[in-house]
Length: 114
Image (tube, rainbow, N blue to C red; front, side):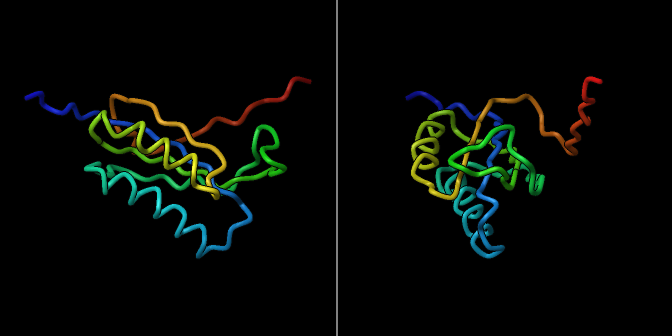
């Protein structure tokens, strides 16, 4: 019998900015519950707040950004992606394997060419 590999992942999730506070909380809880129900463990959550999107997505210009660090069996990632595609309040998501949990996240300001 093969032992299940566990890896550390960084997930970025962008929820619709048009959601009410309660709806946004429920939508994000659905993402976290999806991870934990499949034997994943949430390590750290960073709520990045409302930000302008780099380009319009389905006529949306802003989104609520979250970054979640979690450990999970490698076999569940595709299952999570399938669920994310069905999540109507989730504008975009990205999941990558990482080496460590970032305790703080900082994004430098981009300087515009003059």
